[in-house]
Length: 351
Image 1 (cartoon, rainbow, N blue to C red):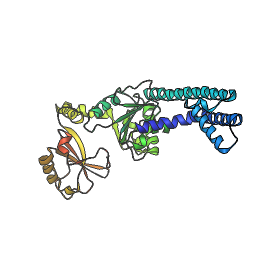
Image 2 (image 1 turned 90 degrees about the horizontal axis):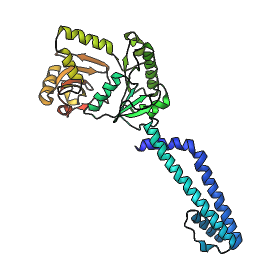
Image 3 (image 1 turned 90 degrees about the vertical axis):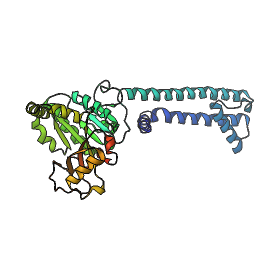
Image 4 (image 1 turned 180 degrees about the horizontal axis):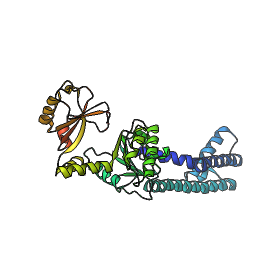
């Protein structure tokens, strides 16, 4: 919240600082100096101490705390009332500016024109059916990850719980408002099932990689022929939803029940789910069979694969030896059974 307010303050200072605040301060200083000189010449001795007392009286009069008995001539009374009226004008101006800032803040936030101020969050670029379902899945995840949606629409299509940034995902300023430099991952979803949408996804990945190359990028692709082009952008992961769905349907046709099993694993259902964790150093030197037995005994988790650097070894051989920094993909009923292990959602390489 403080980062978000600071961003709005900087924006308002750039926009209004030179038009409202600076002229108001300069005008107040000029009025105070003229009133000080006038009162001193009309009623007081022209000494430095009297000038200082008159200056203090002028400032306090603007603040509605000046003593009218300080002056005793018609000239002094006129100056007093001029300062009092000017003070009311300053109060009205400052109050209006504060109210304007609050209204501007609320309107900008509601219209998606603010800045998230998050760290370690996930940014979803674009909106489609996949984006809607993945946001529901992320919100149900045990990690409680914060989500920012960057999309160009009149209102937030994701609803409550998702910070909305209205803008262009290829624009650096809009990416900065979404907090890309401090995000954990960015998910790019094509807005429609066309080749042009895939080309736009390529531009989005290039913009993110240039701005925050350490952020993990995941892209949904419409046309499998565009995969080689996306790979040249150094995207971390590419998902061709049509290809995945067709292969799952084919396996389900041959082996009934597989679709239900896969759906349960990747969705936040009542059954087991997939997790990826970083192994502590005490697991170094274990064989895959030793690790599998320990994971099962201590965490009620079933080992599926080992990730090393940017490669994943599915169903590794029994003589596979674990090294420091290895990550494992397991199936478990909940994250709670893996509490001794550190999550790999934020840190570590992905394949």
